[in-house]
Image 1: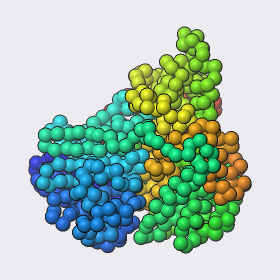
Image 2 (image 1 turned 120 degrees about the vertical axis):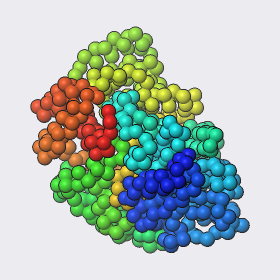
Image 3 (image 1 turned 90 degrees about the vertical axis):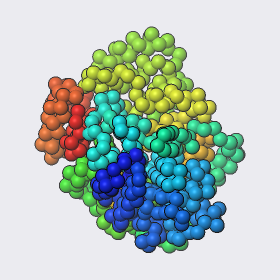
Image 4 (image 1 turned 60 degrees about the vertical axis):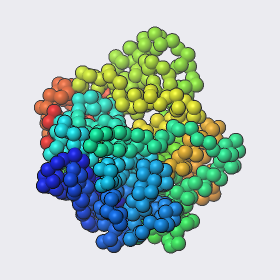
Length: 620
């Protein structure tokens, strides 16, 4: 796990050297163990290293092949790198690193080497003979990669947006269409970003660039139809899922440093810890955050799981004050604004301070195994009465709902008035923090198609071939997961140089689960397919407990301890004139007065946006 940066097409070698060092400096938090650079005519690669596999100096990056033709920088981990090395035995390896395995594979197969890799990664390889740059991102988008093309034809890329901005080659200019999307979804969907001239390389894609060409190509898509065995036999399906998940967990245990697991005591993290205990040669190290406040303390369940699997368990005791004290640091860690993720920052920092450099997480279980209520809402909407109501009638109903000042009711209006009651028509509204109408009232351009609508529309013929629950999983993974969940996990864990690995996002497991029929996946109780696939691994107390998660008192904090910060940020944003200052102040005052029509979550992501704009000197 590291940070990478690069510049292609800048002729001034001295300036290129200065710029790549600035870009790498802004990524220092991602890789505190080493830094390295490669600069040649028209190309520069920079790297900050978090040493995980092969801790020797020889494994620092950039790395080069024996002949000096290829240069590589990589962020992430290739879990099956030993298998890759075994497939290319004649390569003269000089390290035991996963990065060199990728270099060997590219030297032999070119871009097709991506088909060999199982891991989370963003990487760049320079071919000095062909004068060609290859940049790629992993299949599920676990690791980020951003890029920009300047008017002078220079390509700049990095693991974080701030690194690109610190190059001085790209304008710090807010994207107005992206602002509208951020208001509704607390994030901006790939390939766009919140910055006007910066793009995100979508998951499962790569770039090839030379002096005369620039091409972007997909090498893997979640909605590609694949064959799978035994899908008509429930027991076989469960057996296959268990085997795939067990292999995924085992792959993610490769490490030359201390490794542990987050343990909340929920189904997903408990499943990961249970399977780790089956394949680990020594007791698993687990880490749980515990609170004195019973309203959001889960230690009863995490302690139960730790005892069952005989883990070396560390309880990290935190108070609400700890979260408040860390909030300024967390806000400074934001690379791309978000309404979520502060919890991840605090937990990651505490875990790293406990001596852990790598942590496995249960992230992804809900998306794969229909763990959210919206999965059921989707099936009911698709199979219920709503599709049978003529759209003109639905528009009348939506008009009545839109008269409400309550945001939830307004979001219902968006669903009812959808052009079609299908995934394209209603999924985006299920994920809204703010209704389309509310966004329009803030910035006046809230009626154009959003990134998630465009993406789902382009891929709907392929997605429609999957079972209904898997259709929703696909939307979750290419929408919310890639653009919120994984992005936030990366930026807030890497702020403390902690590598987080997610076994549920193994592409082989994902490919198989997407084929499973609804009759087997439908959650008779929470994530029943997952639970039954690994039974009797999890105790009933874990399976049938009430889902909690982090429920911190943001509503109360924003009206009390954080009121001064919130009001200063509200005024800062109002002064930029990019959204209606009257509406912003009005909503804030209604929130303070206790109005139930304005939730804290509808204001917090605006406060984070204001802080991010000021911290990064963004022009609007």
